[in-house]
Length: 472
Figure 1 (spheres, one colour):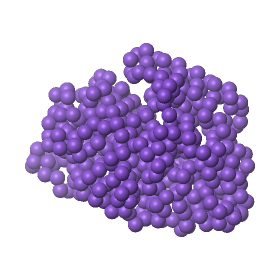
Figure 2: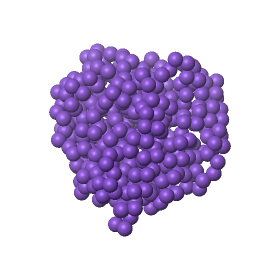
Figure 3: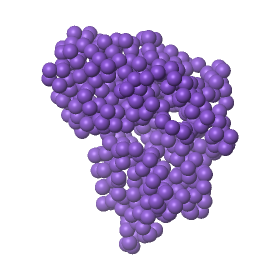
Figure 4: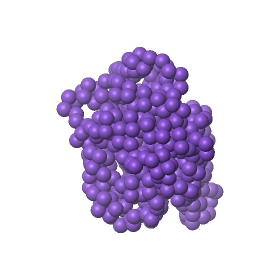
């Protein structure tokens, strides 16, 4: 069923109290390379068509998810051992610059066969021709089971992926360090966050503990999981896009980025943060070296399975600019696996994907704490995981899915890189914001002129009404 909202699915999640950490046929082009914007080079990793007793059909599956990689690897290993089609899947976890790695893989003829898709990238993948439509594979029964959202799954009238889970976004904080610093509750405003980071550093620095950190090895990932969320909760488009005017305007980030810069200037951030990736950050947090950071609802599962926490910790709503929620905390999700347009054996790829979307796998995924199920039939029966910190990540009235913002190509430094450079070196924040808005609007105009998408002003758009709504 094609839907506009995730309300039905999430009402089941809330009712059940569930949370988790985040047939064969031919594709629409007769099994040839398929994509919304042209063909892609043939995969160098695929083997022959799957035949029982014949040579192995080898498929490569690329994912950027680390929080669930041990579980998914177990599932893949089981599939390889038990499937009757002689299909062998290799899972490759690409943790850094996933999108760039995918660009290079397609350009060099080394593209994977199955791709983990995400809400902030799937439209770009379709535009580049990286994904093959799956319409001819999906049965009527599957269409009823998996809620499909326009622009998230259904793009240009074609279906590219089905949902598995979504993620809420929260401030993750060390309760022990907060107590040691005399802080009674997590911050509700940016000013409180800056002050709390300073207090935590004052009492923890001697033992190597600091108030705040983010995974700034990738500024896009770091600010995408933090500044974006604070902006959205404060009523601003999290990627700088203003839905009322259909133009980019990064002015809503000024106070947020200045607060982050203040924590850097105060010495309240973990030293070496500029080269920190997310897993090393999690390892430091689990050891009690970080007071707080912002991340996904995958964290409870991470601190149970991947980096067992040696501290008391919890999740709390992210702070807003002034303590008032004027928008919705971005609820992310709606896609999972897609077939690469470069896959030689799309039928075999679909058999694997169909297996991955099985009830037992999706139910276990949720119960182990990897994501919030967005499949109503799974949300209705999955148990609430017994994982410390999980209650702080349950969906609430202030969580909601924002409409997809346009994906544009810009000349020069991207928004996250520009803001991070300012945090480290200073400069004129107003000039940086003006430059970003100008360059992103130039990229937007170019994309609209090419017919890649439409940018239509919506003067009645009200971010405050997004809370509790889980679809575009």
